[in-house]
Length: 304
Length: 203
Image 1 (cartoon, rainbow over the protein chains, first blue to last red):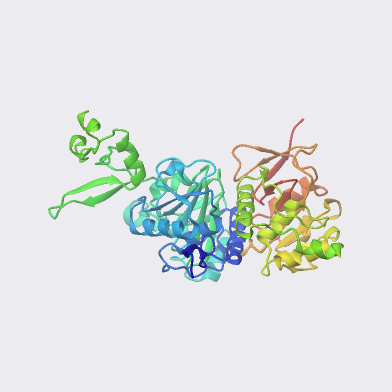
Image 2 (spheres, chains in turn cyan, red):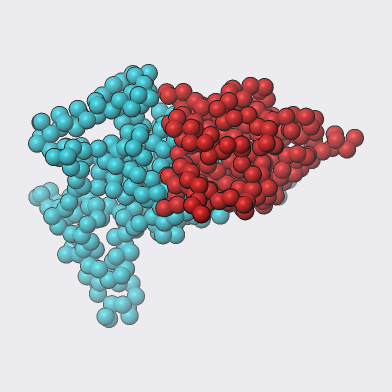
C-alpha cells in the first residue's frame, strides 16, 4: 500500500543530475574568471523547447540552493508565459521561495531586461541567451569567430556599426547592442534593449549568461567594466521616451507600447511590472491609471 | 584496516546540498577575489587533504575532470584512495594536462608556468589550482584589484607559492590565458581568478 505520494521517487533537487550540475558549475567558474568569454558546455535537453530559456534554466539549476529566493522575468514582466512557467518549474523541482520583488530575490532569471531597481551585491542575474556570439551575423563560421576573439580582432563589429551610421545617420542597433568587457572581449548582452547596457557596467551583482541551444555560458563578475561600443563622433546613447509611464508616471524607465483599440490608440507602460506596481503602491499615478476610488479594494483607501 | 575505512568515510553527508553550498562559496569567491568565504567542515579526507580541500574536490571533481596532485598527496595511498572513491576523478601525472591541481605543500609545488594556461581560442581549458593553506591571516597582506573588487581588497593567506607576486604578474600578463587559484584554508576558501592584479601593500 502506498502511504503517501512523498514516498515515490521525485526529481533530483533543481531537476538536473549532480554530474550535469558539476559540469555546468565548472563552466561557470571559468566564465567568471574570463569575463565576457563564452565557455562551451554540454547543454542538456530540458523539459521545454530550445528558445524558451533552457540555457538560463540550466545555469539557475546549477546555482540555486534551498535558501535562495527566485524571481523570473520575461521582457521585464513577472506575469508573462515564459516567466510564469519557469518560476513554476523551479517551485516544483526545487521547492524554493519565489518572489516578484527585485529587492527580495537572490537569483533573478531574466529574458531580455535588467530590472529598473538597482541590483545589490550578493544578487545573481541569470540571462537567457538565444545567440551568444556577437559576431555570428557578421561571420557564420565558429572557427573564424573564435579566432577573431582570440586575436581581439573586432574591426568587423565597428564596420557594422559604421554601416548603420552611413545608412541611417546614427547607430540603429537598439537591442543586443555589443559591449566590451574589461577592455578585452566583445560580448552580446543578450537581446536586452540598449537602454539596459549602462546597468551592466560596475554592477554590484554577478551576471551569468546561459545559451542552451548554442551551448555557451559566459559571465560578468561584479564591479567589472562594461562599455558599449561606439564612435567618438557618434557616442553610445540609450533610448528616451517622450512621455512618462501611463500607469505610474515614471520618467526614465523603459516603456512598452500597449495597443488600446483599433483606432490607433495606445499607451506606454513600464516594461518592469514590479517597478511599476511598487510605484503605484507608493501613490504615483500616470494619466491612464485607474481611479483609486473605484479600483481600491480597501474601503479606507477609497475614502482618501 | 584503519587506512581502508579512511578511504570510504568522510564524504558529504548530503551530496546534493553540501556540494551546492560549496559551489556557491566557490562562485562567490571567484566573483569577489580575495574574500574568504566560510564553508565549515563538510567533508573529512585522510591526511594530508584538508577538510575544505576535500569539500572542493567532492564538489568539482568527477570522471570528466583531469586532476594533478602534488607529491604530498600522491604519497598517501589513503588520500588518493579517498579522492578516487568519492569523486571518480581521472588522475594525471602531467600538470600541463590537468583541469585541476591539488597542492598539499606550497613549498615544493611546481611553478604556475608548468600548468595548463589554455589556448588563445579556448582560454577556459586551463588549470584551476587548489592550494591548501592554514588560513587567511598571514603575515603579509597583498592588495588586490580587478573585476569583482570594488576599489581594492586585502588578502593575507598564511602561505603562498615561491616568488608568488612575480609569478602572478606573469600569469596576469598572459590574459586571457592563465591559471586560476582556489585557496583552501581552515573552514573557509578564497579564490584568485586570472583577472586579479596584485600590488604589495606599501608600508
